[in-house]
Image (cartoon, rainbow over all chains, first blue to last red):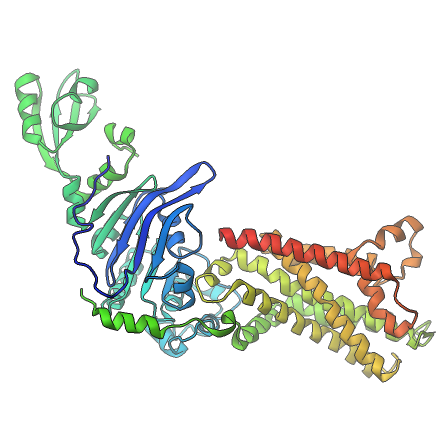
Length: 318
Length: 267
């Protein structure tokens, strides 16, 4: 199942400003495993984009390539019109990684001071500390800070160089609901100034709530690219639920318009874009009764688009 | 959400990379402060060598015996200065291991700091700490008034110990990239103590059986220990000592470069 979005390519050209990120036919192999397969992606300045996919879909590999932490096996990468390493050295790109990445034996302010010293120009340390709300813990050793405080510190470090592109790799892993909400409020506020934000997540809700655009990855390939509502529409369709004794999965999947079939005892679930036709078939050609027709949520859309084909047809129970 | 293209373009061209690949004195200062904050490192590099000097260097039985251009106390002082400086240099290099374990190296790769500048900061940090340990041992030697040698030999010996400890900065870097553990210094302490014995820093090699002596002459601290005592002893340089130091330096640098390249390719 590969869905090409009508959204990509229909945006107006960005004039003289270079694209924030441009990947052209990028692949990445680790031995025999192909983590990223022929990915082409363009991010325009000021977009907030989510890379969404299950674990192992190639999110981190793609991000590592954009950050210049690893080289693609083939294909072209350009960040703000230049090589990723050059964009990093000019302080144009920064990233907040999942965990780690901090020295436990430095204090919070020393960590900021150290990182600031590495850039040609950076924001004043005091401003960055207060902006991230960590002035009170400035003299605390990083090792003694809570997970949330460390994440605020990482965020502060990422904003030091006032980057054009901010990359977040599963930034809210391990945060509670409150922390997650505050974190995203800060990101949204920050992005209003026109910063491009790219974040990887496997929380569908996060992508839906905070991204202008969602890029769905599966097995290292882009399977969908568009706004949340476009993604939902792509995997549109409804689920027809009925009670049918002795249902055969093989036979039901032959029914015109049926995309996947799930049989749970006497209950059958048929997913289809043409639920009317399926319902008509069930009522006229079989003994099905108690019909229910429901629309798919984005959760189902996500599963339908990112799940393995085999998993999808048996109901994506994982 | 709209962006005025011209402002972005102007912004991009106003940005530039830092000079010297990001190397700067603020980072160096914070690295040194970090190293001094580590109690174990300070005890091993500053307190142990002085303590050992006070015990072994001032022993009335031999301390004032004449040897070369000076006395035995001065000889022991140089040995223990080397011991401290070697520990300091190795600690500085091996910090890389801790930083890799904590993910800091990866974080640094997202800044303009070039890998070469990073290594330079590590080596200089190691050298500053090494200078500190040579200084405290030599100050202890001067204050206790036992160690005697001509003034210029204090300077020459101190400098050779300090510069010679660079060999172990390379060793520390190699181990730091080889061992992905936060406990790297515990392992290093054990290895360095064995190497110090084998190099003749604590006990003259002549007190070991012949076979052991032969083996010891191949170990990395042996050649360096002989060379740093040469100015005091005034007995000339044996070419095997130079071969020993150069060979180990090549091995450590090649090893560090090999692991470093693997590391930066993957990070």
